[in-house]
Amino acid sequence: MQVYHVYIDDLRFTFVERAPVEEFKERVVEASRADGAFVPIARSSRPPSEVFVTSQTKVRIETATLPRESAGPSDDNGDDDAFWFDFDSLQ
Image 1: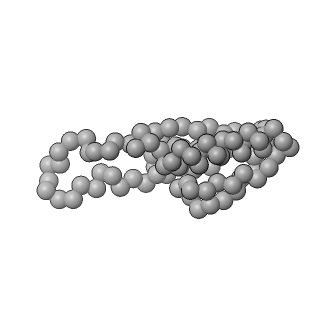
Image 2 (image 1 turned 45 degrees about the horizontal axis):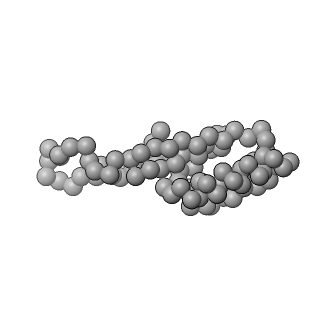
């Protein structure tokens, strides 16, 4: 499973689908070429919001791959919660 971490200045948003990231990238380019604009962010790890983007705004996008299966057999017979991720703690 791929996740996309989008860093905007000091903020981080995590997406689990590529389409909203591509849409966001297009809007950031438009805003940075203009005098600046509010860019909406939807379908991320945070509630929907807007950020103001100018040509000086620092934006970085990283891709991370999460394993689909656990790394190995569990030593105990209890529930395996290896897939409960806090997206804000991933780097």
